[in-house]
Amino acid sequence: MNLILDIGNSSTKVAVYNGKDKKISLRTRLFSCEKLEKMLGKYLLDKAIVSSVRNTPDFVIDLATHGIPDVHILSHKSKLPFRNDYKTPETLGPDRIAAVAGACFAYPGQKVLIIDAGSAITYDFLSGKVYKGGNISPGLSMRFRALHKFTGKLPLISTAEKYVSQGTNTAEAITAGVINGLIYEINEYIRTFQKKHTNGKIIITGGDGGYLKQRISHGVTYMPDIVIDGLNYILEYNAK
Image 1 (cartoon, rainbow, N blue to C red):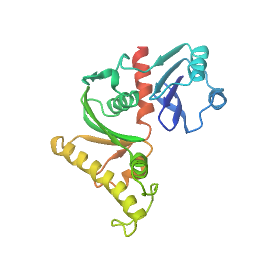
Image 2: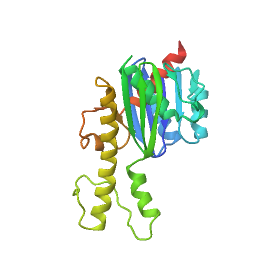
Image 3: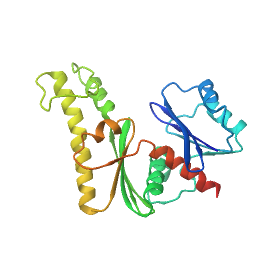
């Protein structure tokens, strides 16, 4: 069985796959050795892959390398199931690599726009089996924090399920400005993509993906597990 560890900026996702079949997955903000051992105790693991956008905790490497025969640390040097046309592959985040691999697995040979709405929001473009690059901009929570941190009096606001489109006080104005601004941004990326690729696929994922998918004007496929699916695909691909 395969252990998948996706260590993000604000949370960690742990999953176990039997080949292509996902047996269990868990997202947590409080990641510990005890929690990992408790979750994995009943599984006989023979392969693992670790993807991290920050420093990987030592206990993760120790636990994986001492109990699992084949451990892969994802990097730009990993063998990938697609060609990477990024000019600085060493700077491409492993989460973006994994999401592209997940899109490659889900929609082989097709043109795909992958929108990953996390701490930052990334837009990545897969054309068949070639990764063509993408863009990065601040995510929802980062936009709220930036308005608070870099101004003298604006309060810190968080995402709201309901909000007015035109604020009549400062809190409403910030809420509508940040959320609508990001929605307009996503809509325009999709519109531009669809104009060039009428049959292309659009995927949204990430911590804010579920919140945003209902507010986007275009049809998108919500795939919350595309990154861990991609990591499992890369792990199997490297084991061949």
